[in-house]
Length: 198
Image (cartoon, rainbow, N blue to C red; front, side):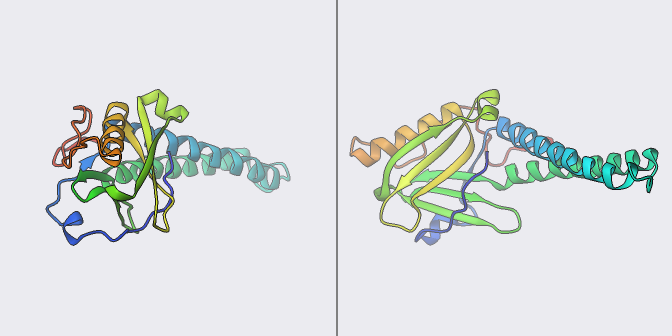
């Protein structure tokens, strides 16, 4: 569920105003992000455990109990950090569709604000990874023209929301009467001011 790096694309000042209402990703996206982060942390633990065992325990430089204690401490640190950071990533990500185009906010330490003007949309794809399918999510990929960004992705959208957003962008790009307002998305997308327990 990783998104490619993006940058601002001639965004009007109003597109990212402090009072702009951005839609949050589906609550299931937070669960998916956490599962993905936990899996990655477990892989790191497995990779680090074997060399530490061979270099220390097998050579008699460290007791097995000490090795287990170190691995347990590392596991608690990595898993708890992964859990908290995934939740923070979810809270920091939002999107909106208006007359200017598709605006996306994301990032923790380095905030990214991207605007894809409607006139530059070429086509839109939906992707589904294993975790996406598990939680009923989709990754929206908007292919653009005339900028240094060939495509912009937004992962963690509810399937119904992603389909509605795709249809709104494609209809507008074809001149079939796409609406400038945000698409009628499913109720699974949390309201911008809603609070969710971690």
